[in-house]
Image (tube, rainbow, N blue to C red):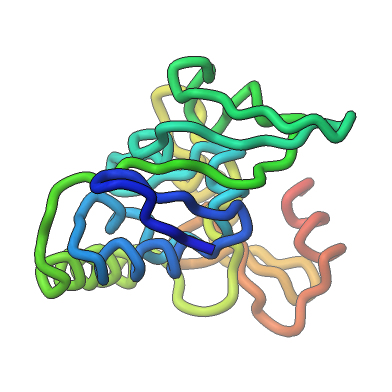
Length: 190
């Protein structure tokens, strides 16, 4: 569920797919969410790991996050109270994201926003595998890139069962032939 609650804020349920969020924001005439186009998953997952692309992070647009803890208590936490790191938000590790209030950025025409989303999509198609994958598998180590390191050790194209390290981008594990979750886990462990 997505609902505009003021001129520059939207309330978004934790289970909303990122693609739906991008389309909604474009439809109401705002930019600033295009970088999420093509990232698989939901808002809750994106918040949990501070997902991002194209030099931007989901927490760049967060105003507040509504969380449920293991004692069934609801917490409404302002952005300034989170420890925001690369692919990690400490305060969300042991909680469930119920939703978030997100800031709308600049007004823009739906067509202009769609054009930018298409541009980002073209960039992804040029340097990421097409087909079934879960996106990037490993966090980038400081001052390097996981895909570069995997490639350096000659693992592009390496497979276990139906899971295969992409030959296009080594930080992606693709479903080459009906891979099982065990295939993917074993490949990750390798």
